[in-house]
Image (cartoon, rainbow, N blue to C red; front, side, top):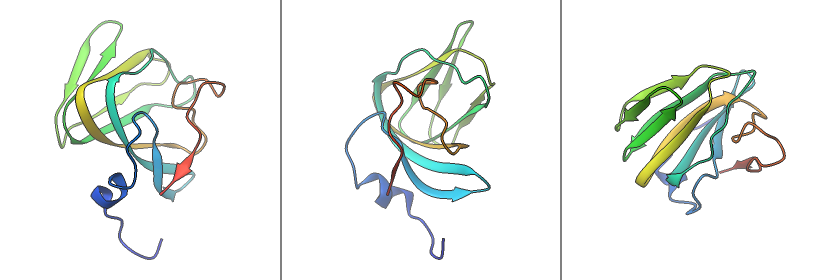
Length: 117
């Protein structure tokens, strides 16, 4: 990467929800932006933690034993193996960081395809 990345500009390039877009890569990880709205499916990641940073809006990260509410500028890391479900009552924009190739649903069969912007 030779230039800075403007996350708002990257988010303006697409409208789909729950379809992360890679904006940068480092040390075998994807840095992604995603627009979310509604409920995602319950899932877990056996081999990696799940990093969420809210850029705009608000989301709930539902865990089986509690719900964590995140506002702009707040982040949460779901420990690997923990079943969880992100929920956004209104559209929210997130920054995600995870190892390249990690399926967003926890299952390669149902995961969103990797897209770069």
